[in-house]
Image 1: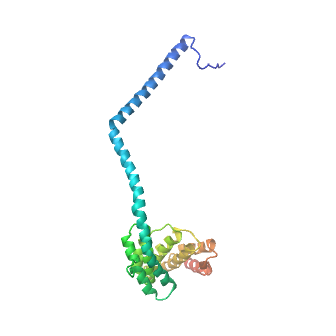
Image 2: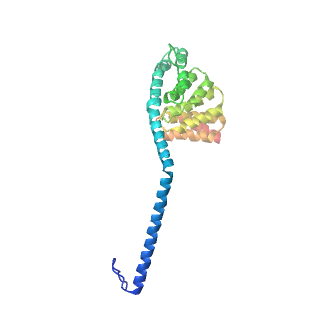
Image 3: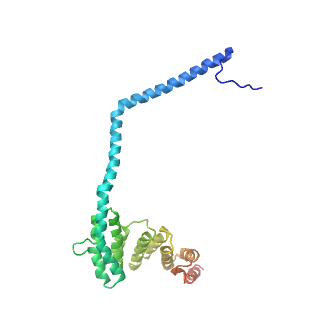
Length: 255
């Protein structure tokens, strides 16, 4: 029968005494080892405390420098860039919604009355949020003015995680390449635009454009896939109204 050994009890037999001595010796060895390790660590810290202090100070300075940069340099820079871009945005909106489009887009790009245009803002405030957005506006202005090469250049310089602006920028590059008769490039950018974000506006629009260009390039299976996705996932979209016709064209081309 197994017996329960009471903790803390004194050893009575010779064997128990020997075991107790061994346990104490082992414990003492472990404690000694730990003490030795701690002592070596303390010695190392004492020996290298100058370098440790320097590293800590440098880390603190880096953090403070980053916070100071954002507060005293980057923040005011962003604010100034946004203010400078206000008039150009006004010209851009007027061009989109009114007449005399080319002249208004030109004002938006180049500025007027001493105010910066999008081209200046993209250059002067490069690396800022406003500078990045100026690339988008400049690219779309060039696209509307039928200057497709510059449209591609500036839209490619724009990056965004926005659900709408990101896909529209990619799709705008696709539109420019269509006009430049570079259909394979247009197709690639339409696919990117469709896949970049999923929403009820840009996704079906660029799936449709990718499908149409895919038919022209002979990529019938992918075109059929794009058209079927519009039908199944975006049945309420504008592109879905006549999608059965395009599905039929793709199926006929495959067969």
